[in-house]
Image (cartoon, rainbow, N blue to C red; front, side):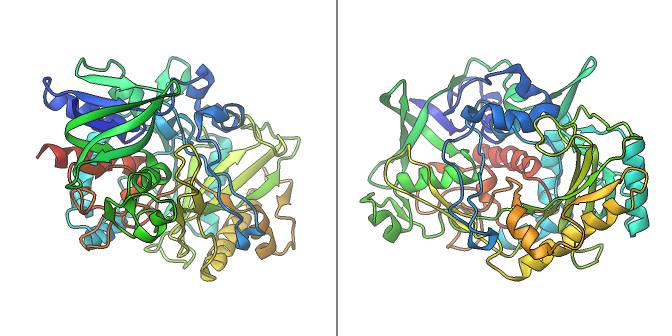
Length: 487
């Protein structure tokens, strides 16, 4: 019997467990994680992140992929979600982007208490603990910025502090400087480097379902470890922090979801909440590539990406930002393209298309069915074309660095190219959305509706997508959400 059980030792769960433990040394917390320790020191080097994704599939959930996507030429898109202590911070690009102020003001309209003024103190809390490092420019970055300026974009001195994100800026990362090296930072390593005595960390333990009493109160969990089934019970609350794909899956396996869907698998209903697994948002990215002439030395960066980002707009408006273009070069470890190349990767945000996560079966180990619904709303394809054109236009202005455009080929049909090459940015969110309305999966206190003793605290509760990578906002939600538990 524990006072609290936290499911998932990733970016959210590690903060929740740490903050709960710090509030009362007599409180007992179980932090349970399906994965184990990182398999290699290489995982901590941000410059190796792309190679890590390829070399160590065991730190991700097997079989997490989309169903064939008709609007992406029926391609199946791999949807990585980490299964390791530290969560997706062990294999993401470590980018730290809060999101725009308008994003959170829109949240506040749907979920009281989550406007910009409400969330800012919690971003600041996280940033007092996590190291946010600003990248350093070199000749290539300076020339890229000159090209972005020529394109018509302004310089943004700090996109996390400026009134607007619009423009070109140095990228910010959750990295730690360690002598001459950079190391990636995870909330598990930072918040729980020396777990206090009142936290039990249970790894390689796969939660299959949440247990409820006859009044729909969460009383414990069932999990497998070493091929044996176990049950553990809770006095106060269970906090589900398994991520935007796994959290709705665990809820559905536990009897929380659309009763008609769960009836297909003879899962007894605990709470009929039809939106569990719905409202899946994700961003797409497209690629504009250019070869680098032999007269130039190709830069090598210690970061996961080149230390530059460009925030633009498909509507040519500084107040409507829906493009976040990261930048890479062919020296990125594990990169499949030419070494002598540079790339602009416009990430298209605020797409209208939405998807869903549903059960494949009632067998917990089976991966869920994931349909991101990419480009099901026709105007999203036009947004992708405009974003891709931004990458092409800026890349072609780097005259000293661009030998020729290699992707897409000049005069290639952009719609066909997008359908063949666009891919996920791993920014899944929204599948257990919070809101004031009764149809939301969790309320504004992050409590699962029609139950007690159960909250969801991770990216799945986003009521709307944001103009950002999801890591920073997920950490903010964890910090703010824990305060709601402790009130």
